[in-house]
Length: 310
Image (cartoon, rainbow, N blue to C red; front, top):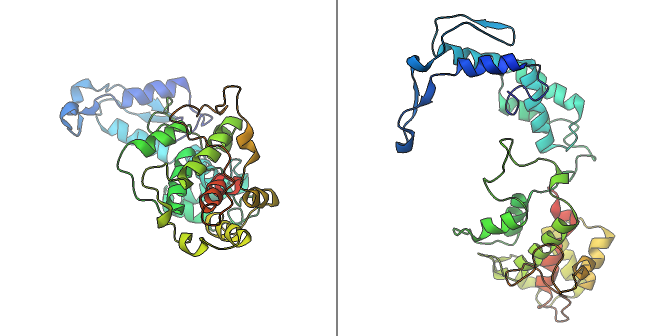
């Protein structure tokens, strides 16, 4: 009720929680260790009368109790609002616009929970195409790694190594402690340490230290080998950053060094926790030869603020 339907402020009481639990007694698995499927065991079911969100579940029934609870929860206006808000937060903004959430919730109710239609409402909305929503969402570590490897044409990695990189960037796969899943808001992913980790990850990708990565697979690599620096920078911005870069990002690319990489501790390691023999960290990347500086440019672009956003 809290995480998947009504939401934490969905209007239910502790007694509703108890009665919902009673309604689902007897719902279980047959031989779960052998991969068995769902089975309802009537002898385990509480067949007494129940009241859930004002709806009476009469006594003497069986599996129908749980099925009616699912109908009650799925048709609740609170469910329509909560799921719509989560979808708007996912696809539009960390602070979902109330008007768009309301329209999406109306669609949810009108279509009996058709998520495709709810998404259609969101994706065709003025809020989705607004300037405020443009690149407003920060990539999670998983999204960052996947998009970076896709950008340079990396081969799929069938080993656990790439998954370990995602974990080192802060999102160990399938290991979130709470049942609500990893956060959908950028404040969970971005801080001083994580920014340094992301910059170093980009440089590690460009230097070929990530599984499946070879810059020979990057489609623009060959044509840029002997091009002037300005042309190389323009091409990297166009291909990796979608043609948009702030003056600060362009300056970093032209100079071949990110000033944040100077933040080292007294022992020479990165302050971001990625130091040591297995570190993603790297030192100065300023390389004069045109062909040799391409990995630097790619790495710095992958670590740029513009690439950190969807």
